[in-house]
Each structure stands twice: as structure tokens, then as C-alpha cells.
Length: 455
Image (tube, rainbow, N blue to C red; front, side):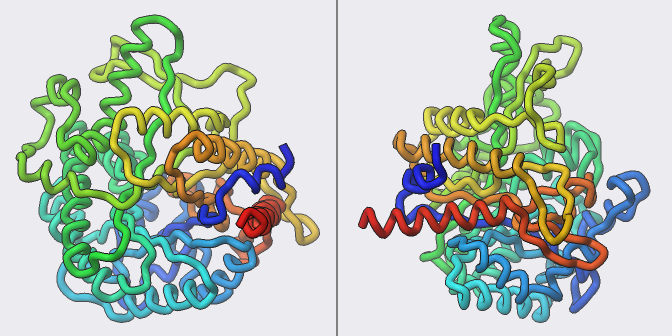
């Protein structure tokens, strides 16, 4: 399929964008009133992040915001998805508001709008104010109420300029990786902490939507989930059943309360003693009507039964040898995205969907002012083709955001993994648009012209 043919498969109103997150790019970790987040503390702990990397400077976006916005505009995209740093706005998580932090996001939003871009904000992309962690963090219901206050502050000050607001980015990562496996901040390894944090995050989402709608009812509100595209490792009954349990444990903990007002029966029955107290009032708050759902997709997972493990007595298994993978070791399968969206639509009454993150990490090198990354171009082309299939098949998918705008701090991998459409030399902070960035720009340009022709 030619790029022109691919471009013409998208309707003129389809939104193409790029995405980032505050902690991964901003730096300026202690400037203008910002106080530490759990990721500041975690990344400074020996052995937690590859090469001892931290987000202290990251991509220095805080000081390079205007030129970075020019860079985004040069890619021809329609929208920019970014996150707002809670510890920059309310440094201790609750209490005093930091006007200098809000001033930065006002300048950012004004710059986005001045360049004709739509701003898509995320309130929480994992940077919980460290002070709140000392009070229990996401395992404490108090954090959900503090988050709602923060959301209201943002809505009052910035909401008139926001196209949409996502409450949370990937609460599965915040809860499971942060509280069960310990791979992410705050680094806990406890089943009860995982389940408590998952419920608090769900509750925080609902409370935040209520708080924001009360002051800015015309803004679009949603949430971003990294739903797993799951496939049985074999056709055997044990693996098929295991995949169902794995799905309930990972996807169901978020989708069921958000869209059906309950937690999965199998999870509650199997883990009842570890589950937090959940009231009917909680579930009513969590199940807020949503204007959109963001889905982040990178790779599928294959699930095998493993009776030696606790519930869900299942594990993800590696893809077969020879399967194409990214530098993360993640299987490349655009069909997994199609499978995921169709499966979710068959289960839930979903609002309009945006693919809010999709991309691949590859071992890029900048030479003579250029970065040749054919693997990423192929990855993007295949996944955008899958999105076009979904749109043509009747799925209400309204936009796609490439992850990420630029190479950045990739959490526990530090700066070792590069997802960007733009290469960053971390020593000089020089930005270089990769071949994939040029390709994405050209594809969007073709879409614009085909849309005009269709009109």
C-alpha cells in the first residue's frame, strides 16, 4: 500500500498528533517552586533506573518549550498530547498552589494554540508529589480526594484552553508496576498495596471528572488505559482459561468499574481478603460518563497457564524465536491493536477512542545530521494501517498520537531506549528529526490534501 493510499483512508477530521509526558521531558526538577515527585526519589535510589539516570534535566523542555513547540508544528500534526506535573502545580500534593507552575502551563497552552494545534492534556502521568507518598500515596483514599482538588485547580486556571483532559495515564502501571512488581515508583511489592492503589486510582479518576465538570462542563474528559491485547499461548483449554483470568486481573480491574460499575467477579472471589473496602458509592463515582477513551498500545501478550503461581495462575510467555521485536524486546504486531479495540468494543459501551500512544523503540544513531530509522517507519505504517482498518470497519477511532515526540527519560530504562520521532543528544540537547518524523509529517500532509479533495 502506498503512503498516499494509506493517507486517504483517514477522514479529514481524524486527529494526528504526538505525545510526551512532563517528567520524561521537562527537567527543571527543583525550579520555580516544583518539589519532588515519587519518580524524583525513585530515580535517585541506586539500582532502580538503568545507568543511574534521573529526570533532573531530561530534555530540558522547561527551558526549551518555545523551540520544542516550533518543532512540533514543523511535523504538521493537528494536536499535542502532554501531561501537567502535579508537583509543579501543587508541590506538596495538597495545600498551597504554585502560581509559577501554572504560569508555565499557561505559556505552554498559549504556545500550542498560537501554532494552530489542539492541546490534549493528561493530569497524571505518574509523578505523584512525594509528600503524598509519605501519607500512603495511592494506597490511601486521601490521595484520591487530593487529586480531585488538583484537577479542579487545573480546570479553573487552564480549562478554557484545553481541547480535552485525561485524568490518568495507564493506572495499571502506577498500581501494578509501582506497587506489585516494584519496577516503577514507589517500588512496592505487595498484592494488597497493588489492589488498594488500583481502587484509589479509579476513585481519583471519578472524583476528578466530577470536580472538573462542575467548573468546566464543556471540556471533553476521559482516561488513558494501556489495555493488554491478550492471546492464549496455545489452543489448549488451560491456556484459554488462563487468558481469561489474566484479562480480568489486568484489564478488568479498570474497565469493569469504569464501564460496568463493578470489579470482576473472579478477581473479587479469588483475592477477597486482599481487596480493599469498596462501597457502592465508590463504584458510582468511578463510573462517570466519559467523552473519550485513550488507548495506549505497543505489543500483544501471549498467556499460558501456570498452576504454580497465585491467582491468576497464568503468565505471559515470550513470542516464538524469530518474531520481530523492538529494542524493548516487545513483539511487533499491529494486528494486536485491531484485536484489542474490537474486543473492547464487543464488551463495553465505549465512548469515542483515541490511540493516545503507539510507537517503537529502536537503536537509533545520529550521523551527519540525520537519523535513519526504517524499522520505526515500518512500525508506524503498519499500525496506522491497522487504525485505518478499524475506522473503515466502523470503530469510532478519532485520532492517533505517536509516542513519542522526542527521545526522553523512559522510566526504569532511563535514557537507554529511544522512542522519539526526534533524536535528542542529551549532552548538547540538540534535536534532530528522524526519518520517521519526516515520514509522519509527509503522511499527514497527504491526508490533508486527500481530505480537501474529498470535500
